[in-house]
Length: 173
Image (cartoon, rainbow, N blue to C red; front, top):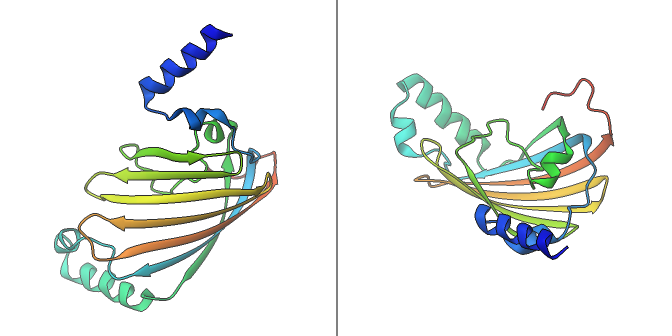
């Protein structure tokens, strides 16, 4: 038992995982989930250098879209599959544009609450803080606040998740 504890501590130190993150499993079920996301964009979250590299028509289109969305929440609902491995790795929320170069750091973790900071490098540099709560094993709520590197805007996301069942048949991701 003592040897197993030493191995766990050694692995935690090696991978940089805080020991409190190993203490408790997150109390959510694996399987199919329905996620509803409300996104609010303030300012322009796209760095000026990224806009400068676009053709003028595309840049104008993006700028017009950003103006139209400014201060107005948008809602998106989708289904996703969350594996037990993803729960064990505190990777409950996945981005459609998951960038393997992003680093995640667990700031705090309990059976019902997980706080994670994610930092992504250029060309889409950003820093996000995610707070995920399992109100029950079948219901999640989350907030995400993201700032794009070099941009003047911010993105705030409120999310609600509802577990649909153990089978992920027909669900991508």
